[in-house]
Image (cartoon, rainbow, N blue to C red; front, side, top):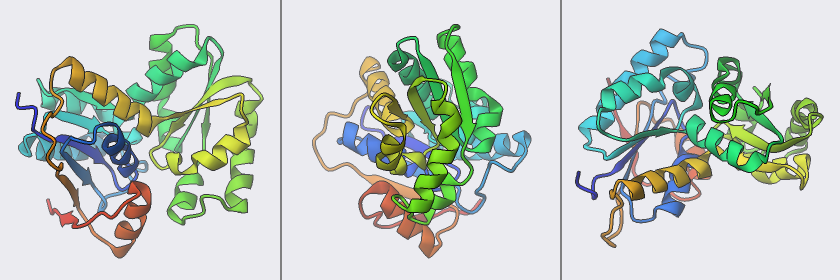
Length: 267
C-alpha cells in the first residue's frame, strides 16, 4: 500500500475534529480526510439500523478517497456499527475511539477502578465496559452519562461556573468509587480537560480518547510500515454534509486552528 495515501477520519458531526487535532500533533506528516455528517447529526437518537446504514455510506465514501487507514472518531458509531466498517474496509486497517480508550484505561488503571463518562447512547451501549472487561476480566468499571456536556462545549462554556457545577454533580458518584482513571468517552470532552482535572483532582488520570486514538493510529501505521515519510506539507480536507456558519466557528475551536475551506457533500 502507498504510504503517502491519506488517513480517513469520520464522525457524525464536529466532535471528531479533536481526534484530527491529536493526529496532527502526533503524526504531523500525514494527509488527513475528515468527514462529518453534520446534516444528520445527532446519531444518538437514531436506530441501530439507521446508524449502520449511515456508517456504511461514510465508510464507502472514504474508501473511494483511497485512504490507507480508517478512524471511527464517533463513539456512537464505534459502539454500534464498528463491524460494518471492518467488513467494508477489508484489508484497510480500522481503529476506533472506544478501542483506543479502553486499551489506555486498562494500561493506566493499575488494577484500580475505571470511570467512563459519555453521552447517554454510548453509556447505554455498554461498549466501553464490555471492551475493558475483554481486556481485563477483573476490571471494575463505573459508567456515567453526561448529557449536558456536549451542548455546554458547543456553547463555548469550557470554564463556566455552570459547567463546573454540572461536572461536579455528574462525577460525584464515579469519584465515590475510588477510580484511578476516567475515560473521556466523547470527542467533545477533551475541550473540558482543564476543568475536569480540577474537579477529579490529582489522584485520577484522565484518558483522552482523542489522544489515545492518535497514539494507537501511530503505532498501527508504524507496525504496518505505512507512515508517510515525505516532509512536504500535508494536505487536510474537511468534508461535511452541511456547512452552517456555526460549524466553522465551533470547528475551529475544536481543531485549534483555521479550518480553511470546507467541502460540502450531498448524498
